Image (cartoon, rainbow, N blue to C red):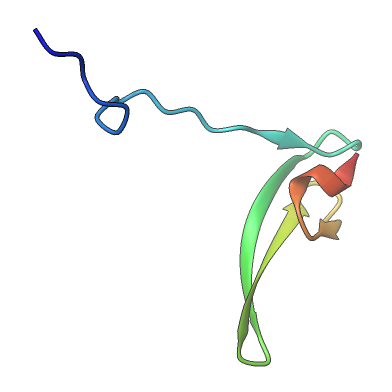
Length: 56
């Protein structure tokens, strides 16, 4: 019996990021001056950064 290909595997995991204040970081998409920008924002303290790893 053949093994399932790597693209057919159903298990997927999502990584959760947390701010130093204890709030969860969510990604948001903003449309500014004709361009899409992805921003990471803490739900608790409303701090925004470019990517989730910048909160450390």
